[in-house]
Amino acid sequence: MIRIYNTLSKKKEDFIPLEEGKVRMYVCGPTVYNFIHIGNARPMIVFDTVRRYMEHKGYEVNFVSNFTDVDDKIIKKANEEGVSAEKISGRYIEECKKDMEGMNIRPATTHPLATQEIDGMIDMISSLMEKGYAYAVNGTVYFRTRRFEEYGKLSHKNLDDLQAGSRSLLISGEDEKEDPLDFVLWKPKKEGEPYWVSPWGDGRPGWHIECSVLSRKYLGEQIDIHGGGEDLVFPHHENEIAQSEACSGMEFARYWMHNAFLNIDNRKMSKSLGNFFTVREISEKYDLQILRFFMLNAHYRSPLNFSAELMEASKNALERIRTAVDNLKYITEHASACELTEEEAKFIKETDKFEADFDRSMDDDFNTADAIAAVFDLVKFANTHAAEGSSRAFAQALSDKIQSLCDILGIITEKKEELLDADIEELIEERQAARKAKNFARADEIRNLLLEKGIILEDTREGVKWKRA
Picture 1 (cartoon, rainbow, N blue to C red):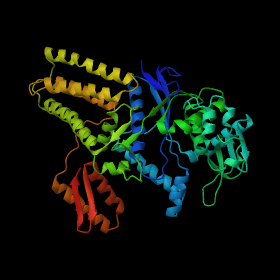
Picture 2: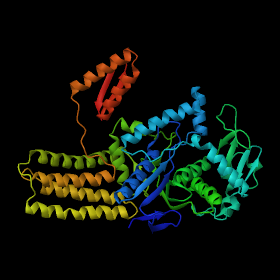
Picture 3: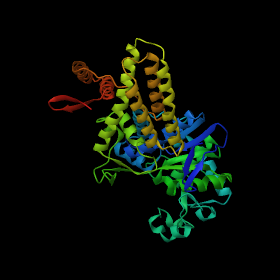
Picture 4: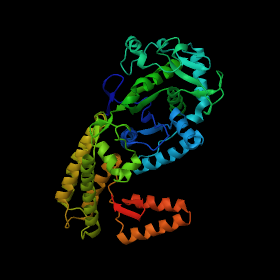
């Protein structure tokens, strides 16, 4: 039985799905106005792993994760570049997908875009107005927070306490609101911004309503798991609950999962501190599998500290697993005996305990740190018992076990083939020729190919320099 820590109840609960054998899961995706940063990467890796484990346990998972493609930051970037907001969001969705592929994050069942579901948002807002949960003032529609009696049940915040501290929570248009705690469902258009036609005037949806509508459309009125970073608990997820439950009259999500923050060298990541890293920047120094391995080495609810030293430690640890798999592959290819010996069969039976330890760890609120410890126990066992005289079947069975557990964690065990220096120089020459011929697509393709092989290029005045990551 899988047990999940539910933010709603503040305790671990047995996972019982709404529909037997199926899991409906929604995770808030990024706002696409730039390359994703490593803080964005943590929930992506965490919930991809949750999904993989659910599938390992036999569940059919309908996994929905959105892209917020209309937002103030996207509009600002578009205005700076003199292009449309759609162009900016489209560009960074594609870049995000490249980074996700590098981290071995599988595409969601559906990756809906907010801008494709505006009609659904207008419908939900209209329904909330009809039920007395929302009101319009001069083209802005607000949600009546106090009308939803259970407001604060996820963040465990008291409305009166929020009222007392509301100065910090107030947003534009506060003088129009019936109550300072009411939040925006629809906002009127501004000059130079994208807008849609609505019964309350031209404008665009508020952020919170987007996820409620996307979740309802692709997963139904009720879902099993809603996930995201702990920074979304309030107000985003709290507001989602209020909107969705006021509209449907039903419980919105059974289990709320939130990953903890990521710090950089023990400090909060921020551009002003100069410790802000995108996943793309990390990929220039490390194989993104190392980033994934690093993230899974801590429990998802524990704060995680990112540093060069810890990434190097993760690189070395992952290398131990890959070397073990590589050795088993060598034994498999060169073994003289094919069949298992009686002693080897006993050894294979002994490895069941490592798989049981792995499952026990993952069943306990997806404790990936302990699950990885079980993988290392299996690696140590394989290194101890598999040697050149071992049978092909024995080496293959051990390799399959290591790889199947790593696959649940989304960790790729195959070593990347190293390019020879001469091959690298040849590809760099081809890239230079492509750039000269203004074939920038091919030039980028070569750079990305080299990056995948762990080769980092640096264009300097003296020419192209390269180094191995």
